[in-house]
Image (cartoon, rainbow, N blue to C red; front, side, top):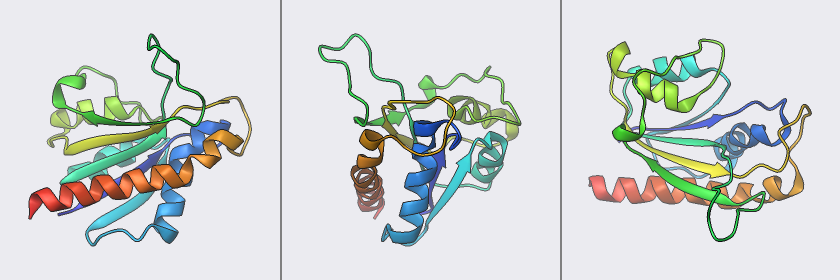
Length: 163
């Protein structure tokens, strides 16, 4: 099995840097199974698309996600959500910005680039602040260990179903 854990987001927009920070920590202390690559893609969507064309079995995107509105209780900053992305969730007509990062557009465009989207999950964190600035807010920073554990659990579950 080959898997890619991709931290995405803009570290210059405070909590939008959640994905890159989780990727950095996973790479240095994640104790990941063999065959797993971790990378900070930041806002380089085209780079992620080309790396996916090389072929991976599983993709875990780590990113800031908006709170789920309309629920009984709105999610507080630092709340984590794990989402499975299916092909029907993707828009093949989305525009892939070579200078930005829209994970849905990257995955939606893979087929037109000659590839297929792998099994894909998002480990997302609700941000508190995405204004200009460097550094995560305390609730988002506190969510990093749980996000790392969620990534490791997803990889473990997928690995065990493939053997």
